[in-house]
Amino acid sequence: MATDSVSIVAAAHSRFGRLGDATLEDLIVDVTRAALTDAEVAASEVDALFLGHFNSGLVPDGFAASLMLQADPELRFKPATRCENACASGAAAIQAGINAILSGSADLVLVVGAEKMTSNTTAQVTQALAGAGYQHDVEEAGLSFPQLFGLAAAQYEQLFQSPLAAMAAIAAKNHANAMANPLAQMHKAMSFDHCNTVSDSNPCIAQPLRLTDCSLVTDGAAAIVLASAKRAKQFRRAVAIRSMVQVNDFLPLSQRNVLAFEGPQRAIRCALDKAQVTLADLDFAEVHDCFTIAELLIYEAMGLAPHGQGHRALEEGIVQHGGTLPVNLSGGLKAKGHPVGATGVSMHALAFAQLTGNPIGLAAPNAEFGLLFNMGGMAVANYASVLQARRA
Image (cartoon, rainbow, N blue to C red; front, side, top):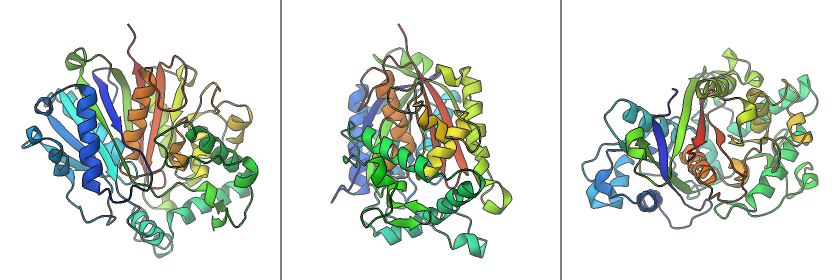
């Protein structure tokens, strides 16, 4: 999908973390109201609503789309649809909103991503997320996602140089970035030495992944308002969605080379091509670092380094704050948090803030183009989008 005919015109974002007694409904309602306030529009002007929400048994609210209507009586009777594509559910909801506008059935769309995870134990969350893996192979179905990405890290280590130091550098980078993000779950700097060492405070979770290599169990929500080209002209801020691409790959790992990250590579390259930009045009990227090995493989999928040499993007300072293409200035899933259904919407909400000159956290100065990559499963549902700031 290549388009300049849909723009983000408003956004809202909750704090991410352990949000105590806040229910899924609370998260959805609060961020919906905040997005409408930011857009300075009445709820009656919204044509359709889309919710990104994975659930998978995490909360009893299995039919959550209409919870958005709780935010304002004028939303009653509006079409509301829940979108689910594992950890890319938020991006799936955005794509559905874009399609509604491109079809001509809507001019103004509200998209929310939300997840309530911390009311469950870590074991329960791990089991729920494992439902996004292939269930019809006994060996594969028995693996958690930390174990699946641990296997990828182990394979990478066998084929190339050890990825452990690069993974530790990614963790330290993202924790440092999150220190400036007031909405991030983790505001604790992590040194490279700490992240690169197995210890009582940094135990091995799934060989060779350490605790600091894994994203967080998180509550949170984010929202954006999408507008058609004609409608966007009426808003004081607008960020064009230059392209959004979805690429799905086989679910069984046995049918693909996991380290090739072909789905992410195809999605990112196609999004850049459709937007008619190159890596050199980008000012920042927010990518799906559910585990640090994923961010390392995404560097290679983006073309920042050859296959097996993702560490170079770190060593050469490319992806650092102040580098030529800083990655995860927000702190990423690793430190900002990963409420799975909210993650894709969060990326777009924060990019909107960045591209309208009001960054939440670290800034990419005078940013014009941003690349966002949201992934569901083990590189199965892959969504890449390129956003562009509106210039006078």
